[in-house]
Length: 470
Image (tube, rainbow, N blue to C red):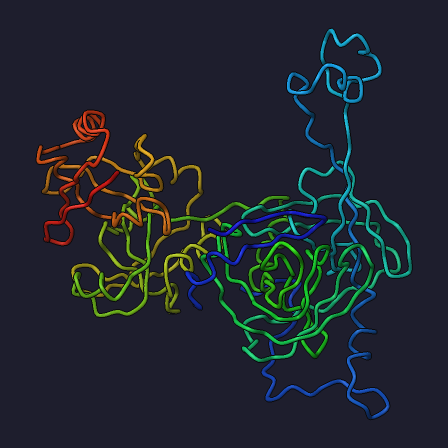
Protein backbone atom coordinates (compact mmCIF):
# COMPACT_ATOMS: atom_id res chain seq x y z
CA UNK A 1 0.00 0.00 0.00
CA UNK A 2 1.07 3.57 -0.57
CA UNK A 3 1.18 5.80 2.48
CA UNK A 4 0.77 9.52 2.09
CA UNK A 5 2.12 11.92 4.63
CA UNK A 6 2.23 15.65 5.21
CA UNK A 7 5.26 16.82 7.17
CA UNK A 8 6.21 20.49 7.05
CA UNK A 9 4.74 20.91 3.61
CA UNK A 10 5.66 17.68 1.85
CA UNK A 11 4.19 14.27 1.29
CA UNK A 12 5.86 10.95 0.80
CA UNK A 13 4.88 7.55 -0.49
CA UNK A 14 6.41 4.35 0.82
CA UNK A 15 8.29 1.92 -1.40
CA UNK A 16 5.91 -0.99 -0.76
CA UNK A 17 3.60 -0.43 -3.69
CA UNK A 18 5.94 0.86 -6.42
CA UNK A 19 6.12 -2.55 -8.13
CA UNK A 20 2.37 -2.37 -8.78
CA UNK A 21 2.58 0.96 -10.64
CA UNK A 22 2.45 0.78 -14.44
CA UNK A 23 4.07 3.48 -16.53
CA UNK A 24 1.47 4.28 -18.02
CA UNK A 25 -7.53 22.48 -23.19
CA UNK A 26 -5.32 25.25 -23.14
CA UNK A 27 -5.39 27.59 -20.15
CA UNK A 28 -5.37 31.39 -20.16
CA UNK A 29 -2.29 31.13 -17.93
CA UNK A 30 -0.45 28.80 -20.34
CA UNK A 31 2.31 29.72 -22.78
CA UNK A 32 2.15 28.79 -26.45
CA UNK A 33 3.32 25.24 -27.06
CA UNK A 34 6.54 24.87 -29.06
CA UNK A 35 8.49 21.84 -30.19
CA UNK A 36 12.08 21.78 -28.94
CA UNK A 37 14.32 19.83 -31.32
CA UNK A 38 17.03 19.54 -28.67
CA UNK A 39 17.80 20.95 -25.25
CA UNK A 40 20.54 23.52 -25.07
CA UNK A 41 22.16 23.85 -21.67
CA UNK A 42 22.11 27.46 -20.39
CA UNK A 43 25.52 29.06 -20.10
CA UNK A 44 27.25 31.91 -18.30
CA UNK A 45 30.31 33.55 -19.83
CA UNK A 46 30.45 30.69 -22.33
CA UNK A 47 30.48 28.04 -19.60
CA UNK A 48 27.50 25.65 -19.22
CA UNK A 49 25.53 26.81 -16.18
CA UNK A 50 22.01 26.85 -14.81
CA UNK A 51 22.59 30.25 -13.21
CA UNK A 52 20.85 32.34 -15.93
CA UNK A 53 17.77 30.10 -15.71
CA UNK A 54 17.75 30.25 -11.90
CA UNK A 55 18.10 34.05 -11.95
CA UNK A 56 14.98 34.29 -14.14
CA UNK A 57 12.80 31.85 -12.21
CA UNK A 58 13.62 32.24 -8.51
CA UNK A 59 11.99 35.71 -8.12
CA UNK A 60 8.67 33.94 -8.85
CA UNK A 61 9.27 31.17 -6.28
CA UNK A 62 7.97 31.84 -2.77
CA UNK A 63 8.04 30.28 0.66
CA UNK A 64 4.64 29.39 2.08
CA UNK A 65 4.30 29.49 5.85
CA UNK A 66 1.08 28.16 7.31
CA UNK A 67 -0.47 28.44 10.75
CA UNK A 68 -3.27 26.08 11.68
CA UNK A 69 -5.05 24.78 14.75
CA UNK A 70 -3.74 21.53 16.13
CA UNK A 71 -6.20 18.82 17.06
CA UNK A 72 -7.31 19.24 20.65
CA UNK A 73 -6.29 16.36 22.91
CA UNK A 74 -8.85 14.12 24.59
CA UNK A 75 -8.44 15.16 28.23
CA UNK A 76 -10.08 11.98 29.45
CA UNK A 77 -7.05 10.09 28.13
CA UNK A 78 -4.53 12.32 29.94
CA UNK A 79 -3.49 11.66 33.59
CA UNK A 80 -5.18 14.12 35.98
CA UNK A 81 -1.89 15.57 37.22
CA UNK A 82 -0.93 16.54 33.66
CA UNK A 83 -4.27 18.02 32.59
CA UNK A 84 -3.44 21.62 33.70
CA UNK A 85 -0.87 21.74 30.89
CA UNK A 86 -3.60 21.06 28.33
CA UNK A 87 -6.55 22.98 29.83
CA UNK A 88 -7.54 26.55 29.05
CA UNK A 89 -6.48 29.18 31.62
CA UNK A 90 -10.13 29.93 32.46
CA UNK A 91 -10.81 26.29 33.33
CA UNK A 92 -8.25 25.64 36.08
CA UNK A 93 -10.64 23.50 38.11
CA UNK A 94 -11.13 21.22 35.14
CA UNK A 95 -14.86 21.07 35.64
CA UNK A 96 -15.58 21.57 31.97
CA UNK A 97 -12.51 19.65 30.86
CA UNK A 98 -12.06 22.03 27.94
CA UNK A 99 -8.75 21.49 26.12
CA UNK A 100 -6.36 24.39 25.61
CA UNK A 101 -6.32 25.60 22.00
CA UNK A 102 -2.99 25.06 20.32
CA UNK A 103 -1.57 26.14 16.99
CA UNK A 104 1.01 24.65 14.71
CA UNK A 105 2.96 25.89 11.73
CA UNK A 106 4.39 24.29 8.63
CA UNK A 107 6.28 25.43 5.59
CA UNK A 108 6.12 24.68 1.92
CA UNK A 109 6.73 26.34 -1.41
CA UNK A 110 4.78 28.10 -4.13
CA UNK A 111 5.18 29.89 -7.44
CA UNK A 112 3.68 33.15 -8.72
CA UNK A 113 1.80 32.52 -11.97
CA UNK A 114 0.11 35.92 -12.49
CA UNK A 115 1.91 39.07 -11.33
CA UNK A 116 -0.99 41.43 -12.12
CA UNK A 117 -3.56 39.48 -10.11
CA UNK A 118 -1.14 38.24 -7.48
CA UNK A 119 -1.95 34.58 -8.05
CA UNK A 120 0.32 32.05 -6.33
CA UNK A 121 0.17 28.32 -6.98
CA UNK A 122 0.89 25.71 -4.30
CA UNK A 123 -0.35 22.32 -3.04
CA UNK A 124 -3.68 21.74 -1.31
CA UNK A 125 -1.99 19.74 1.43
CA UNK A 126 0.36 22.65 2.19
CA UNK A 127 -2.46 25.04 3.10
CA UNK A 128 -5.13 22.54 4.18
CA UNK A 129 -6.95 23.69 7.36
CA UNK A 130 -4.81 26.82 7.55
CA UNK A 131 -5.89 29.72 9.76
CA UNK A 132 -3.24 32.00 8.26
CA UNK A 133 -1.03 31.77 5.16
CA UNK A 134 2.08 33.96 4.84
CA UNK A 135 4.03 34.25 1.59
CA UNK A 136 7.71 35.25 1.71
CA UNK A 137 9.18 36.56 -1.53
CA UNK A 138 12.80 36.34 -2.64
CA UNK A 139 13.30 40.00 -1.61
CA UNK A 140 12.15 38.96 1.93
CA UNK A 141 8.81 40.74 1.80
CA UNK A 142 6.14 38.92 3.78
CA UNK A 143 2.57 39.04 2.46
CA UNK A 144 -0.65 37.67 3.92
CA UNK A 145 -2.24 35.41 1.31
CA UNK A 146 -5.89 34.71 0.67
CA UNK A 147 -6.92 31.20 -0.33
CA UNK A 148 -8.83 31.68 -3.60
CA UNK A 149 -9.64 28.00 -3.85
CA UNK A 150 -8.25 24.54 -3.24
CA UNK A 151 -8.82 21.10 -4.75
CA UNK A 152 -7.94 18.01 -2.74
CA UNK A 153 -8.49 15.65 -5.68
CA UNK A 154 -5.51 17.03 -7.62
CA UNK A 155 -3.69 18.57 -4.62
CA UNK A 156 -3.75 22.05 -6.18
CA UNK A 157 -4.38 25.32 -4.34
CA UNK A 158 -4.57 28.88 -5.64
CA UNK A 159 -3.58 31.78 -3.37
CA UNK A 160 -3.67 35.54 -3.91
CA UNK A 161 -1.41 38.25 -2.51
CA UNK A 162 -1.34 42.04 -3.05
CA UNK A 163 -0.13 42.52 -6.64
CA UNK A 164 2.74 44.96 -6.31
CA UNK A 165 6.20 44.50 -7.85
CA UNK A 166 5.70 40.78 -8.37
CA UNK A 167 7.44 38.53 -10.88
CA UNK A 168 5.54 35.63 -12.44
CA UNK A 169 6.96 32.41 -13.83
CA UNK A 170 6.21 31.29 -17.36
CA UNK A 171 3.96 28.23 -17.62
CA UNK A 172 5.18 25.59 -20.06
CA UNK A 173 3.47 22.71 -21.85
CA UNK A 174 3.99 19.52 -19.84
CA UNK A 175 2.67 17.49 -22.79
CA UNK A 176 5.92 18.23 -24.62
CA UNK A 177 8.29 16.71 -22.04
CA UNK A 178 10.10 13.45 -22.63
CA UNK A 179 11.77 10.96 -20.33
CA UNK A 180 15.40 12.05 -20.11
CA UNK A 181 14.71 15.81 -20.33
CA UNK A 182 16.70 17.90 -17.86
CA UNK A 183 14.64 19.61 -15.15
CA UNK A 184 15.24 21.87 -12.17
CA UNK A 185 13.32 21.81 -8.87
CA UNK A 186 13.16 25.04 -6.87
CA UNK A 187 11.65 25.35 -3.42
CA UNK A 188 11.98 25.60 0.33
CA UNK A 189 13.33 22.22 1.54
CA UNK A 190 13.62 21.92 5.32
CA UNK A 191 12.70 25.61 5.57
CA UNK A 192 16.07 26.65 4.13
CA UNK A 193 14.64 29.09 1.61
CA UNK A 194 15.25 29.17 -2.14
CA UNK A 195 17.13 25.98 -2.95
CA UNK A 196 17.79 24.66 -6.44
CA UNK A 197 18.33 21.02 -7.43
CA UNK A 198 18.57 19.46 -10.87
CA UNK A 199 18.03 16.10 -12.54
CA UNK A 200 16.07 14.50 -15.33
CA UNK A 201 12.52 13.38 -16.00
CA UNK A 202 12.61 9.73 -14.93
CA UNK A 203 9.09 8.79 -16.05
CA UNK A 204 5.83 10.38 -17.14
CA UNK A 205 2.19 9.40 -16.72
CA UNK A 206 2.65 7.77 -13.31
CA UNK A 207 -0.81 6.66 -12.16
CA UNK A 208 -2.36 4.37 -9.57
CA UNK A 209 -0.07 5.62 -6.80
CA UNK A 210 -2.88 6.24 -4.34
CA UNK A 211 -1.53 9.72 -3.52
CA UNK A 212 -4.26 11.76 -5.20
CA UNK A 213 -7.70 11.09 -6.55
CA UNK A 214 -6.50 12.25 -9.99
CA UNK A 215 -2.98 11.21 -10.91
CA UNK A 216 -0.75 11.64 -13.96
CA UNK A 217 2.57 12.40 -12.29
CA UNK A 218 5.93 13.43 -13.70
CA UNK A 219 8.62 11.42 -11.93
CA UNK A 220 12.02 13.04 -11.45
CA UNK A 221 15.33 12.33 -9.76
CA UNK A 222 15.89 16.04 -9.05
CA UNK A 223 16.29 16.14 -5.25
CA UNK A 224 12.95 16.93 -3.63
CA UNK A 225 12.77 17.10 0.16
CA UNK A 226 10.39 18.16 2.96
CA UNK A 227 9.23 21.69 2.20
CA UNK A 228 9.55 21.41 -1.59
CA UNK A 229 5.80 20.75 -1.96
CA UNK A 230 4.13 23.42 -4.07
CA UNK A 231 7.38 24.53 -5.69
CA UNK A 232 7.95 24.43 -9.45
CA UNK A 233 9.61 21.81 -11.61
CA UNK A 234 11.18 23.76 -14.46
CA UNK A 235 12.55 22.85 -17.89
CA UNK A 236 15.75 24.31 -19.34
CA UNK A 237 13.83 27.16 -20.95
CA UNK A 238 12.80 28.31 -17.49
CA UNK A 239 9.17 27.23 -17.93
CA UNK A 240 7.19 25.58 -15.14
CA UNK A 241 6.15 22.13 -16.35
CA UNK A 242 5.07 20.67 -12.99
CA UNK A 243 4.32 21.35 -9.32
CA UNK A 244 6.26 19.20 -6.87
CA UNK A 245 3.91 17.26 -4.60
CA UNK A 246 5.41 14.08 -3.12
CA UNK A 247 8.53 11.98 -2.67
CA UNK A 248 9.17 8.29 -2.26
CA UNK A 249 10.12 7.36 1.30
CA UNK A 250 9.57 9.16 4.59
CA UNK A 251 13.14 10.26 5.36
CA UNK A 252 13.71 12.72 2.55
CA UNK A 253 15.00 12.46 -1.01
CA UNK A 254 15.84 9.02 -2.39
CA UNK A 255 15.95 10.03 -6.04
CA UNK A 256 12.24 9.55 -6.77
CA UNK A 257 9.99 12.58 -6.63
CA UNK A 258 6.61 13.33 -8.17
CA UNK A 259 5.21 16.50 -9.72
CA UNK A 260 1.73 17.34 -11.00
CA UNK A 261 2.00 18.26 -14.71
CA UNK A 262 0.93 21.76 -15.67
CA UNK A 263 -1.61 20.36 -18.15
CA UNK A 264 -3.56 19.07 -15.15
CA UNK A 265 -2.72 21.93 -12.81
CA UNK A 266 -3.82 24.77 -15.06
CA UNK A 267 -7.19 23.23 -15.92
CA UNK A 268 -7.87 23.17 -12.18
CA UNK A 269 -6.53 26.71 -11.68
CA UNK A 270 -8.94 28.07 -14.28
CA UNK A 271 -11.89 26.75 -12.27
CA UNK A 272 -10.46 27.85 -8.92
CA UNK A 273 -9.90 31.37 -10.22
CA UNK A 274 -13.44 31.54 -11.62
CA UNK A 275 -15.47 29.94 -8.82
CA UNK A 276 -13.10 29.04 -5.96
CA UNK A 277 -13.81 25.34 -6.40
CA UNK A 278 -13.71 22.53 -8.94
CA UNK A 279 -16.94 21.12 -10.30
CA UNK A 280 -15.73 17.60 -10.95
CA UNK A 281 -17.10 16.13 -14.17
CA UNK A 282 -18.27 12.53 -14.54
CA UNK A 283 -20.50 10.59 -16.92
CA UNK A 284 -21.87 8.06 -14.40
CA UNK A 285 -19.92 4.85 -14.96
CA UNK A 286 -17.90 2.56 -12.73
CA UNK A 287 -14.79 1.42 -14.58
CA UNK A 288 -11.74 -0.79 -14.34
CA UNK A 289 -8.69 -1.40 -16.55
CA UNK A 290 -9.02 -3.46 -19.69
CA UNK A 291 -6.45 -6.25 -19.34
CA UNK A 292 -5.34 -8.57 -22.18
CA UNK A 293 -7.13 -11.44 -20.43
CA UNK A 294 -10.41 -9.54 -20.18
CA UNK A 295 -10.08 -8.31 -23.77
CA UNK A 296 -9.64 -11.91 -24.94
CA UNK A 297 -12.62 -13.13 -22.91
CA UNK A 298 -14.81 -10.35 -24.29
CA UNK A 299 -13.57 -10.79 -27.84
CA UNK A 300 -12.52 -7.14 -27.88
CA UNK A 301 -9.95 -6.03 -30.44
CA UNK A 302 -8.19 -3.55 -28.15
CA UNK A 303 -5.14 -3.58 -25.91
CA UNK A 304 -5.94 -0.50 -23.82
CA UNK A 305 -9.13 1.07 -22.51
CA UNK A 306 -11.56 1.25 -19.62
CA UNK A 307 -14.07 -1.53 -18.97
CA UNK A 308 -17.50 -0.32 -17.83
CA UNK A 309 -18.57 -2.34 -14.78
CA UNK A 310 -21.82 -0.49 -14.08
CA UNK A 311 -23.84 2.45 -15.40
CA UNK A 312 -25.72 4.71 -13.00
CA UNK A 313 -29.43 5.30 -13.39
CA UNK A 314 -30.35 8.65 -14.89
CA UNK A 315 -26.72 9.46 -15.75
CA UNK A 316 -25.26 10.93 -18.95
CA UNK A 317 -23.74 7.52 -19.76
CA UNK A 318 -27.13 5.82 -19.55
CA UNK A 319 -28.66 8.52 -21.75
CA UNK A 320 -25.91 7.91 -24.32
CA UNK A 321 -26.67 4.18 -24.39
CA UNK A 322 -23.50 2.97 -22.67
CA UNK A 323 -23.94 -0.45 -21.04
CA UNK A 324 -22.10 -2.54 -18.46
CA UNK A 325 -19.51 -4.60 -20.32
CA UNK A 326 -18.74 -1.87 -22.85
CA UNK A 327 -15.14 -0.79 -23.34
CA UNK A 328 -14.26 2.91 -23.73
CA UNK A 329 -11.15 3.25 -25.90
CA UNK A 330 -10.89 6.97 -26.68
CA UNK A 331 -12.05 10.46 -25.69
CA UNK A 332 -12.37 13.01 -28.49
CA UNK A 333 -10.20 10.83 -30.69
CA UNK A 334 -7.36 10.37 -28.19
CA UNK A 335 -6.78 6.83 -26.94
CA UNK A 336 -7.61 5.87 -23.33
CA UNK A 337 -4.79 4.04 -21.54
CA UNK A 338 -6.88 2.75 -18.65
CA UNK A 339 -9.48 3.59 -16.02
CA UNK A 340 -7.33 6.20 -14.25
CA UNK A 341 -6.59 7.93 -17.54
CA UNK A 342 -10.31 8.12 -18.37
CA UNK A 343 -11.14 9.34 -14.87
CA UNK A 344 -8.49 12.09 -15.09
CA UNK A 345 -9.61 13.38 -18.45
CA UNK A 346 -13.35 13.41 -17.78
CA UNK A 347 -12.89 14.70 -14.23
CA UNK A 348 -10.98 17.77 -15.39
CA UNK A 349 -13.61 18.80 -17.93
CA UNK A 350 -16.20 21.45 -17.18
CA UNK A 351 -19.67 20.20 -16.31
CA UNK A 352 -21.89 20.46 -19.39
CA UNK A 353 -19.10 19.83 -21.89
CA UNK A 354 -19.97 17.41 -24.68
CA UNK A 355 -17.37 14.74 -25.47
CA UNK A 356 -17.17 11.99 -28.07
CA UNK A 357 -16.31 8.54 -26.74
CA UNK A 358 -15.29 5.54 -28.79
CA UNK A 359 -17.11 2.59 -27.25
CA UNK A 360 -16.86 -1.11 -28.07
CA UNK A 361 -20.20 -2.84 -27.52
CA UNK A 362 -20.52 -6.56 -28.31
CA UNK A 363 -17.25 -6.37 -30.31
CA UNK A 364 -18.63 -3.48 -32.42
CA UNK A 365 -17.00 -0.05 -32.26
CA UNK A 366 -19.24 3.04 -32.06
CA UNK A 367 -18.76 6.74 -31.45
CA UNK A 368 -21.18 8.25 -28.95
CA UNK A 369 -21.58 11.78 -27.63
CA UNK A 370 -21.88 12.21 -23.86
CA UNK A 371 -22.46 15.35 -21.80
CA UNK A 372 -20.28 15.69 -18.68
CA UNK A 373 -22.47 15.65 -15.56
CA UNK A 374 -22.10 16.72 -11.95
CA UNK A 375 -20.50 14.34 -9.48
CA UNK A 376 -23.17 14.31 -6.72
CA UNK A 377 -26.00 13.50 -9.13
CA UNK A 378 -24.20 10.65 -10.83
CA UNK A 379 -22.64 9.16 -7.70
CA UNK A 380 -26.04 8.99 -6.04
CA UNK A 381 -27.37 7.06 -9.01
CA UNK A 382 -25.47 3.91 -8.06
CA UNK A 383 -27.38 1.61 -5.74
CA UNK A 384 -24.39 -0.23 -4.36
CA UNK A 385 -23.70 -1.90 -1.06
CA UNK A 386 -20.58 -2.86 0.83
CA UNK A 387 -20.67 -6.17 2.68
CA UNK A 388 -19.68 -6.24 6.34
CA UNK A 389 -17.07 -8.96 5.89
CA UNK A 390 -13.34 -8.10 6.19
CA UNK A 391 -12.37 -10.51 3.40
CA UNK A 392 -14.64 -8.61 0.97
CA UNK A 393 -13.24 -5.20 1.80
CA UNK A 394 -12.78 -3.09 -1.32
CA UNK A 395 -15.72 -4.59 -3.25
CA UNK A 396 -19.24 -3.26 -3.79
CA UNK A 397 -22.27 -5.35 -4.75
CA UNK A 398 -25.80 -5.05 -6.08
CA UNK A 399 -28.63 -7.22 -7.36
CA UNK A 400 -27.89 -8.49 -10.85
CA UNK A 401 -30.11 -6.88 -13.46
CA UNK A 402 -29.07 -9.27 -16.22
CA UNK A 403 -30.43 -12.63 -17.31
CA UNK A 404 -28.58 -14.47 -14.53
CA UNK A 405 -30.07 -14.16 -11.06
CA UNK A 406 -27.61 -13.41 -8.31
CA UNK A 407 -25.42 -10.59 -7.00
CA UNK A 408 -23.19 -8.55 -9.30
CA UNK A 409 -19.76 -7.35 -8.15
CA UNK A 410 -20.00 -3.73 -9.26
CA UNK A 411 -16.50 -2.61 -8.39
CA UNK A 412 -13.32 -3.95 -6.80
CA UNK A 413 -10.46 -1.70 -5.74
CA UNK A 414 -7.11 -2.87 -7.02
CA UNK A 415 -4.83 -4.38 -4.34
CA UNK A 416 -7.76 -4.58 -1.89
CA UNK A 417 -8.49 -7.76 0.07
CA UNK A 418 -11.32 -8.67 -2.30
CA UNK A 419 -9.06 -8.18 -5.32
CA UNK A 420 -6.37 -10.50 -3.96
CA UNK A 421 -9.03 -13.18 -3.44
CA UNK A 422 -9.79 -12.98 -7.20
CA UNK A 423 -13.08 -11.07 -7.15
CA UNK A 424 -13.43 -8.91 -10.24
CA UNK A 425 -15.94 -6.31 -11.50
CA UNK A 426 -18.92 -7.86 -13.35
CA UNK A 427 -18.60 -11.22 -11.55
CA UNK A 428 -22.04 -12.69 -10.81
CA UNK A 429 -22.22 -14.47 -7.46
CA UNK A 430 -24.86 -17.18 -7.87
CA UNK A 431 -24.19 -19.32 -4.80
CA UNK A 432 -22.69 -19.46 -1.33
CA UNK A 433 -21.49 -22.84 -0.03
CA UNK A 434 -23.52 -24.75 -2.66
CA UNK A 435 -26.70 -22.84 -1.80
CA UNK A 436 -28.02 -20.62 -4.61
CA UNK A 437 -28.51 -16.90 -4.00
CA UNK A 438 -30.64 -14.74 -6.23
CA UNK A 439 -30.33 -11.28 -4.61
CA UNK A 440 -28.57 -9.17 -1.98
CA UNK A 441 -30.87 -10.29 0.84
CA UNK A 442 -30.08 -13.98 0.28
CA UNK A 443 -26.38 -13.21 -0.20
CA UNK A 444 -26.16 -11.37 3.13
CA UNK A 445 -28.08 -14.09 4.94
CA UNK A 446 -25.82 -16.82 3.51
CA UNK A 447 -22.66 -14.94 4.54
CA UNK A 448 -23.90 -14.49 8.09
CA UNK A 449 -24.69 -18.21 8.29
CA UNK A 450 -21.17 -19.07 7.14
CA UNK A 451 -18.66 -17.06 9.13
CA UNK A 452 -15.56 -19.00 7.96
CA UNK A 453 -14.13 -20.54 4.78
CA UNK A 454 -17.04 -19.51 2.59
CA UNK A 455 -17.08 -20.73 -1.02
CA UNK A 456 -18.61 -18.35 -3.56
CA UNK A 457 -19.95 -19.76 -6.82
CA UNK A 458 -19.27 -17.20 -9.53
CA UNK A 459 -20.09 -16.81 -13.20
CA UNK A 460 -17.49 -14.80 -15.08
CA UNK A 461 -17.77 -14.31 -18.84
CA UNK A 462 -19.71 -17.54 -19.22
CA UNK A 463 -17.35 -19.58 -17.03
CA UNK A 464 -18.10 -21.09 -13.61
CA UNK A 465 -15.56 -20.19 -10.93
CA UNK A 466 -15.14 -20.77 -7.21
CA UNK A 467 -13.65 -18.21 -4.83
CA UNK A 468 -12.89 -19.05 -1.21
CA UNK A 469 -13.08 -16.23 1.32
CA UNK A 470 -11.84 -16.60 4.91
